[in-house]
Length: 384
Ligand SMILES: Cc1cc2nc3c(=O)[nH]c(=O)nc-3n(C[C@H](O)[C@H](O)[C@H](O)COP(=O)(O)O)c2cc1C
Image (cartoon, rainbow, N blue to C red; front, side, top):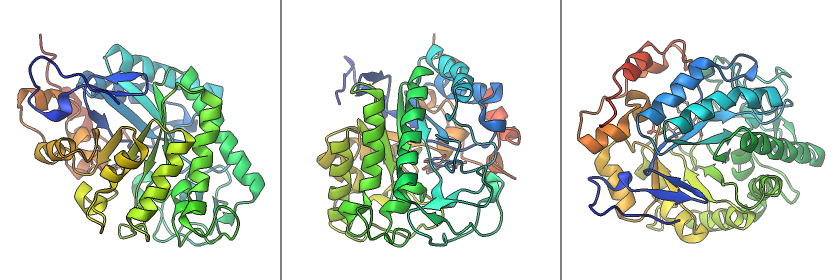
């Protein structure tokens, strides 16, 4: 990671440039991955192009796409989720990628296997997981689900090989479609996190038991993708303690678990780590009992750029995280929806719009997002 300081310091630390692998980003502001379930048969649409392009026009250095399913077997999480499982799906992303690049932004594809939290794959009710453990909570209505999740089928060694192959193939398709990198979704309770989590992983083989075994699946995914795309293409992983269906879970071994997890993904070849904060702000989910933050620990152990998340639209919080060395970049979810031109607003000191949950109501589709359209229409003009 390297940073270039302009001759005069920008007014906020997030406005400095930063590099992830070979990609130099114009600032440290990242759009967090957000599922919008607006891609019939998994194909990215013209509305999605306008949606992602607006963040690039608004000045974000990097956009991480919504979670994209990598294979046609069991990875899909929701109806109308976009895919990178076929060449046709990859081709549909091309106009999105080109529009973001034309507006000066970079874009990484988030590759996501939903595992036991799938609420809409083509096998309908059959889902896969590390062990046959009924997931907590219920399917999410904002993504078109209702009622309890299915009890997953415990994955065989053959299933694991298929999933690794799926991630690797999708990463190659992402690279060939022009994406600047991929982020492997290892957070928030989806398949990779199900392997990391003690109560969803009850395996007795090399993927279960102590943390060194529970992280083996995450590291195997990174290694498989690294082998497929070569040494240069940026691959990152998103990790978290909390989950969409469990805001309370914390890594039972605290910082010791963190060290093992970050060392394993480092050795497998990640170029960045993104720590998600599901449902809470960064400090609530990042503070470890040992007095270190999970993002700071990731930086120290892995030695790669780290993205912090969770309420980072508050400028003072983001400045603190960056200046105190807890992270190298910050990602904004809800703050970016309310302010697709957040970087321009931060640079000019303009008013920041508060997030309004109506933007995701009654569900997260772009079609329902009247307020999103008005946010887009309010984009600040490009400085002369
Ligand atoms: C509508 C919506 C969809 C989301 N979808 C994803 C997703 O596909 N992948 C993911 O890793 N996180 C997803 N998240 C979580 C966000 O990336 C982020 O971690 C969360 O919103 C907290 O950040 P914030 O405080 O900036 O909003 C989603 C969040 C929202 C609001």
